Length: 359
Image 1 (cartoon, helix red, strand yellow):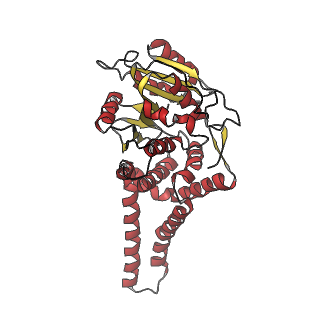
Image 2: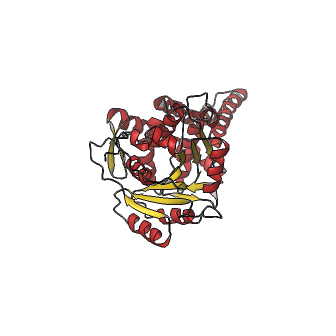
Image 3: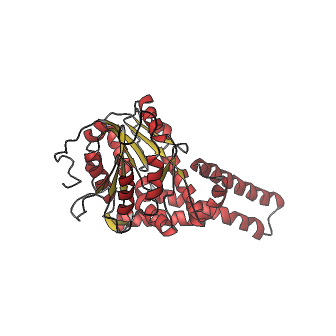
């Protein structure tokens, strides 16, 4: 079945579990084993894997050991299922991740579906707590933003910038307000009511968008249902990118879609760079200035730093990463501009060896 055709006949499966955890996985042999280890240990009294909940790993045409790792875990644990996602064709009108999620959802037996990425690590008890939280807030969709693990200078300096800007564009209070149209989610943890999911066509209705998490949240909210989104370091953590090249490819894919005015944002960050490095040069190099004039320049510089760091502090990254983030601004500007070029000029983006149409 074409994954983009959400009107196609759905498979009839018994809905006899509380939760189905669906993990789309493409070339994730470095991360999947750890993810599954933290998930199979989520069982507790009256919430047993294979009895009240299940795990479905959807292998998305991996060329590494992803499938064999999943098969080994499935062989050792009742309640773990492994299947292969349908192969993508150029005319399918879907992305690999959406197609994999859609394939997993169609065999899921849970009253709720949790879509989580293979590079996540789940804290003990986070699945049952998320179910209680969704019940408490009557949320048709509950999404967690994980604690981010970053390695290397460029990840430490750029990732806080991205997440601080996301916090500005998608304030969680507004996202969670049913009177506001703003919707957001983090695809690393999306818990959704089964009926709500299929009522809006699930991932099968998302087409070729590479920002499937936000699109799904928007569809659920537009359908008049409650969504809840929050930062959840108590629930899970993730290492999104293992190399700088992966990080650059990932943000080139997403930034132009995440921010409503990416070029405007890039222009403001260019101004930041000019002020950061230009004002000290003026204060030191313009030898004819009076002391009070130098003082004014230094005060403007300090005010610029304070404004910058107070914004980046909202990223929830460690203080050391926030401090070095000022050096990542030029690369962040480049990624914003390249993302716009990829989406609006080249009309295509690449991710994990595949090319998708730009937004």
